Length: 279
Image (cartoon, rainbow, N blue to C red):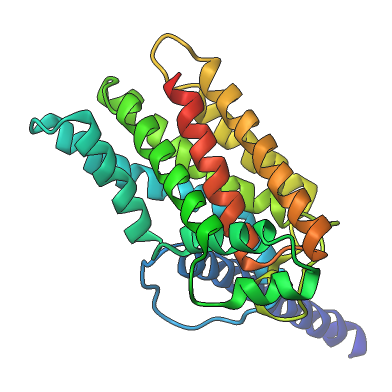
């Protein structure tokens, strides 16, 4: 009797446990995707999932994919503007404006706050307090102006390419910015504060996710730049290197990263990528 029913019961329990594990894993991925979209864009996502560091790791690993989607959407606006007769400069302004609108200007705000904090040459606690202020100081203004000029100028050069190269170019520049966030959240980089976005995502991303995200963006970059398949990948790698310098300096001054530092890394990398693609 035991021999007839025992294995069946064990199999049923094992099968049920397996199904629960599968459902839990799907739910974790769904929560990670939801967190990535809601954190990095203004796109509304229905439902509320759990938020923890495991899901934050998934969200930050998916940042380059979100960036590619944002880039395609923004590039569509720029390419359409050129098609109906707008100058490349006007089309570039619309492209950069669309990117800011689709992200609530969140990363631009982080760039300004980080520039003010690091430019103050104040001690760690004072610099972190500066980052929390709602106003923008002179360093922040200069950083925003230079970044936006660089992005508009780079996008203007990219948007005169054949449309498919132009879409790839804009998408790669924007995705490179989000890839810089992935790298800034890799293991070994601490959070500057015990609370906030930085505390949730800092040090969560493993090496496999950073390498995979970089490979995807670099491969896409090879399609940008007509006749120069090497230029896009080089632009991506240089942009990531410059963003890494910004993050390293912030970690040295602040003791770790914050949400603002991630925004600064994003906008720095996107700007350098745009410029690199446009040369």
